[in-house]
Amino acid sequence: MYAVIKTGGKQYRVAAGDKLNVETLRADAGSEIEFDQVLMVGEGDQVDVGSPFLSGARVKARVLEHGRGDKVHIVKFKRRKHYHRQAGHRQNYTRVEITDVARS
Image 1: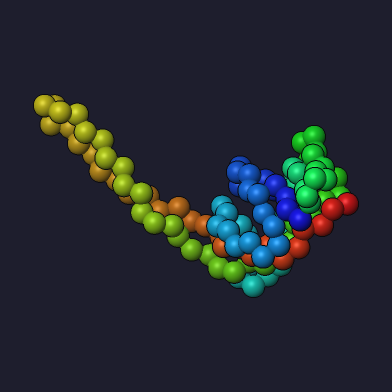
Image 2: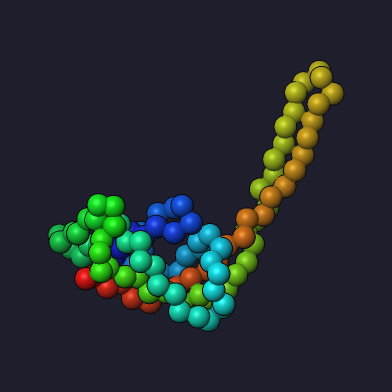
C-alpha cells in the first residue's frame, strides 16, 4: 500500500519501509510522528483520492535524525561590469522512516 502525503509544502509518494528527507519537523530523533495530510492512498487497482485530503487516512513515521543537506552554490556574474557575488546555502532536513500507511 502506498500514499501521497503533504508536508513542508511538498508532496511525497511513500510506502511502509521508505526513508526520506523532509523539511525540518519539530520532533526529537527516535520519536513517532503522524502525517494527517494524506492526498491519496492506493493499493493495486484500488485508489482513493481526497479533495484535497482523505479523512481518516494516516501515515505513521519514525524520526531517524536531523541534518543539513549538501551545499548549494549561488553565483551571480555580469561580464565587463566588475560585478560578481558568491553565496552558499545548506538546507536543514529531517530524515524519517515510514512505518505504517492506514486507510480510513
